[in-house]
Image 1: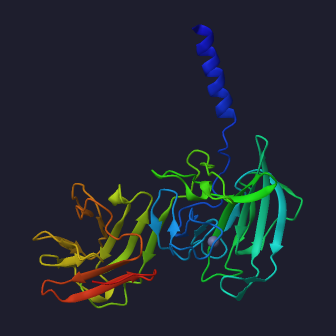
Image 2: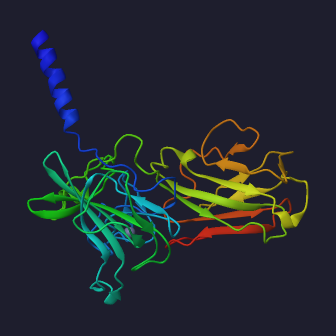
Image 3: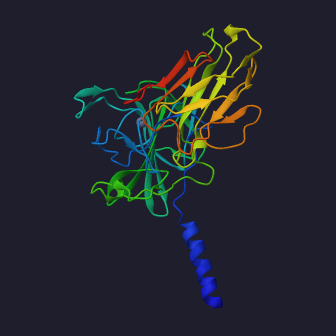
Length: 341
Ligand SMILES: [Zn+2]
């Protein structure tokens, strides 16, 4: 029995040492998500769903369909780090191409590709839409080394980083999801003839957070309360609705020391209603955060008490009504199929 135990430990150590989790975050800090890897399917744009199938199994409407990587809203000039030690195989501008599905020219963007050899498996990490590169082809880079700065070169609607991971399978690079696959059904990309299985490639505490956040310029309004930001998509927010929240403040133009929120209410796109408790107050220097799910209200935090996600995954609309039931604010995120009730 002792031998079996030792052998089991040996296998555990072996499997740990062969773990493919080799990536560290390509940037520092947290930024709103613009697109995830589309498990159905990363090579088609668009597919029949018209949405991205996330690694946790939800169809989400983000920037576009058929996406091979992750897009985060990094401002121009944000430092980009090598996600792992490897050899730079491309650094510079890509050629302009024609996108067949859209029959239009796609501008070339500034790209870095790094090849990594991990336990006899070859991986490629790609960093696209950069403003500037600091490395050259053939150079060996170390994990965590600054390789360039983010930008909005190529086909972009705004500044962001596109980060992609490919795996060499039978001599062919295949896009894989670095977050793996965690849904309760089979991964369509693994079953696809041109696809392969994805596994979590992030080292512990290195995976960038995934959330969709919209911010609003609040101080232009002369009304009692405004929404400052809405976090509308988080990982498994259908199971953990507190991944979502929004924040309200009194805009400085309104010039009141507080607002009595009695009678004020908020609607989501499904017509569900949140009513502030009688006597609830918002102070002029306060940010009040309202989470979607359950919890104990306190000082700067309230809970909507919804058992599920409040905003869905196809965009959101949030409407504030005052104590006369007059709409004083409507906030939406322009994703496809977003409707306001
Ligand atoms: Zn992208």
